[in-house]
Length: 55
Image (cartoon, rainbow, N blue to C red; front, side, top):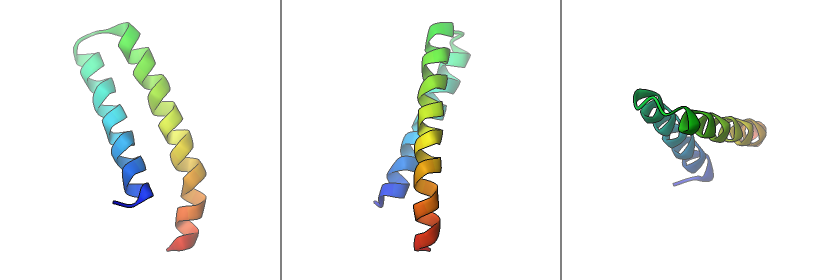
């Protein structure tokens, strides 16, 4: 699995955690997972420029 695929898997996992927290109506976890998701987006955006050049 490439590094980009791993990043995408982590991103999807973060979304899953966020959805589960929302379903369970757990406000503390929702904010934690939103923060985690924002970090993943930043990581993907930073790596996205390099990945686009490689294609």
